[in-house]
Image (cartoon, rainbow, N blue to C red; front, side, top):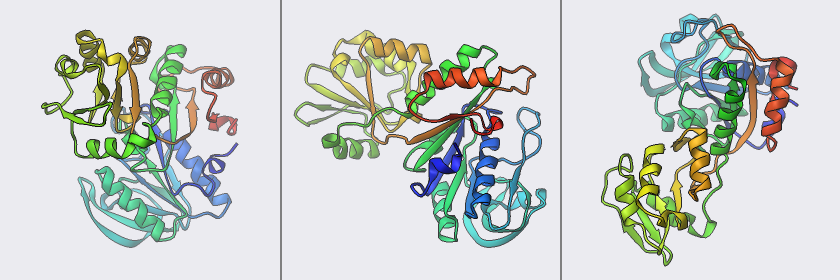
Length: 343
C-alpha cells in the first residue's frame, strides 16, 4: 500500500504528525514526495517549526533531509533558503514573519535538498496551504513539529498521518500502548449531530459551561477548567447533559471532578478535538471504566500510521514483529513500515 493511495483525490491538506522526535516524520514526508513525483503530481509542503536540517538542533542527532523535485511548491522562511541546494523561484512573499525570516512561497526550479519552516500560527499555516493549492499544488502537506499534534485538527487539515517509533521507549509494549492511546484520542467520535451547532458555538465563544437536557446553557464563571475540577463538579446535577471545556482537558481536572460528584456519569464532556486531551493511557482507561464520556466537536480524520522500529539511541525492535504487533492493536486504519517497502 502507498501513502498516495491513502490520499487519492479526497484530501487537499494533509498533516504528518509525530509522537516525538525521530519517529519517522521526515521519512514519511520524503516517501510521499517520492510517490507524488512518480505519478507526476505537484505537491506543496510547509512545516510547523523547522525541518530538513541534517542534524537535529534539539537532540543533536542525524536525521533525514528533505529532497524536493522540480515543480514542488514550498512555503518556508527566507533565512533557510541559502541552507539548501535546490533552486527556488519565489512566487509570493507572505505577510507572515518568523525568527528565521519572512515566509515565502516558492516553486522548485532545479531539484535538491531544502529546509522548511512555515508560519507559527496554525491559522496562518492553513492560509499558506490554501495559497500553495491556488498556485498549482494538487495537495499540500504540513510537517507537524514536536508536540504540536494540533496541526491534525480538522480546522487545519483534512487528513492526518501519524508517525510513531522505538524512540518513545525502550519498552516495546509501552510504545504500542502510547501509540494506540494516541490513535484512540485522535479518533474520538463527534457529538450528536442535532446538538452540534449549539455546542460548537459555545466552544468558539470560549465558554466553560453546562448544557442541560432541555437545551439551556448554564455558565460556569471560571477562566479555565485547569485546577477547577471540584468547582465544576459542584455545578453538575441530574439535569446536566453536556460539559463544554474550551482548551485542554488534563488528568487532574477529571480526578477532581470525579471525586466531587457522581453526576459526571450522566454527562458528556465536550472538547474541540482529540489533540486537546492530555491524559496518560492508563489513567484514561481508568476514567473510561468509571463512566467518563468524552466527545469532540471536530473529529480528526486519521488515515494511516507509519512506524519506525529504530531509535537514534542505538536500540531497535525487530521490524516485522513490531509491525505485526502494532497491526494487532490498530485494525481500523493502515499501519506501515516505509523502510519495509510500505508493508
